Image (cartoon, rainbow, N blue to C red; front, side):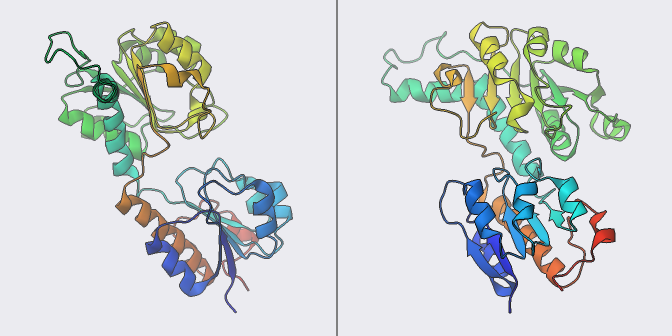
Length: 332
């Protein structure tokens, strides 16, 4: 008999078909995430779980799932999972790192270009039939990216990939990270700066940090007031890294020039959120990794982790390695 897996959303067929070869699949097919009550009900007899960032996987879920042995997360981040509790119970937790690095880095620049050059605003201008006079010297003037200063907060895989792309635009790159990366300073020509220097000296600030207690509201009113009034904020990391109310105030009152956001404190963003009324912010629906190839590769990694565990092997991207001491891999 195949072990049972509950998958909380449809994932690309390249990974899903492999999972179906080895597992009895219980798939949530709605576009919206399953309510927590549904997750609890579906995991009661599940051996494995495929989760997304929107799914709270905590003590309550674990209590309802006595057979659960592995959570294979379809994401790089995992702040939705109680890792410590999973480890204590001998539940393996995996994610999908590395594969989306370049795609997210590309999208970061797409947001930078879109907000700085007013691409989305210009598109709306035409669609709303406001373009009446042809070319005009003062129409839709934006900001250049080339040879400007980019401040990167978080010099991990994605931050490093963004830095590489910035060099193609002739940008000076400052970075702040909890760990100084002298290897990357030599390789990429980036410069380490403390947070205040980065905020004060950058024309663009791009966030690439995980959500932790230390990074919650890392960007708030105090930080926005230190930025240049001509500067732009880009966030493709986690929504709660930014104090959204403070950001709205900064954009509305002109403390900073604009922002490009792919993530939000609440997702989906509420229809009455005041950010939706501003022209100097570009908003996208958590889509930075949304290329067909990348999302398919993520699904393949999810499948590989599950199949490796089924075969009694340590999953390739196991996050809580301490769990091996609690329970060996496998469903037996």
